[in-house]
Image (cartoon, rainbow, N blue to C red):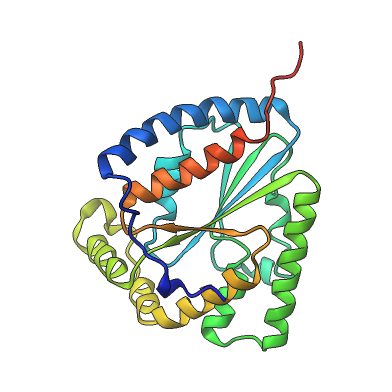
Length: 243
């Protein structure tokens, strides 16, 4: 059983802020080249899932760690509250059109995991329905993997204290004020419920495994995600097609 409270939200001591920022610059250059080769190679798709508590930095991760790649080969989908049309279908219906094609990288800013987390936090569905949804998600991810659609799952792991500071930033800094919502305050009040839900989801939907990213320091969050993505792309021996 994963217990997030036992995992640090701060960077390890063997890397400094200066080192992390310098490394990110190099990683962004590598990602540009690797993504071009990934697109040209065309054997695989890559499905990136970003989850985390409110203010954990999903938008910032996309902007700083992933934006160096060619936008012709990378797409981002944000999953918000289901629309009326989406609610008429099964919970995975809205996901299928956004699964990446071969050669493409698809980033989910939140994902189908919200359809587990929100009912858990709000006690909206019976346990047997939640267990069924978890099983369907595992089948979906296994199915994608068997069809050369790789999945990288990231949980951006922040502390309750850091979340509080970031909510204050949204209230006081003009360039962040637009992000503020009263829902931020309500989510913070439900910290323990969200934490328990994430413990269950990360434990039970663990194939492929989650990358738990210490995210109290934005520089380390960005470096860590970019580093894991770079390593993933490198290990697949990507090739440009013969002309």
